[in-house]
Image (cartoon, rainbow, N blue to C red; front, side, top):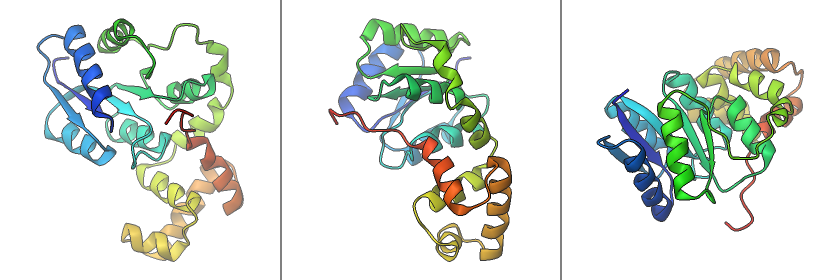
Length: 213
């Protein structure tokens, strides 16, 4: 692939580090930057992309919901997650949600280049020492969440945030009846029966902020 590489991170210094790593791993690629999830969507929509480097902690990322949204909207686009959170469970959930790589922000520049090159070659990259057995924990929950449509995922995120059906309908410009229909499908796909259970399932989408942030 020869498409552009989109770097989505709200920290200019880390965007610069990623740009340097991408330029070294894939000379000649068009590299564009975004400081929010919505801006990343715009950059991807502007021209064919071969890689998205996505920070999980931008103001509108909604944890793993942003990653899942991209995977649903652009299933052929590899996404390399970059994050200050390095817990094995976070890495495992990112890969289970469809990320092609998980790059901790503490990663040395040479390893970032290695990760970028691996993803552009079609491989999956995880941090050295990551135990694949960690994938088993929470993988089923992530797979269920990944089965939601983009609209259902947006509804679920708003339910998780405590919005009532009428508020969700207003925000999404749909009817309350449509919200209820989406919730019925969401409950079925997540194998839950109540709104509270759906909220608990949605907590899998959350990513703890690193203590240093």
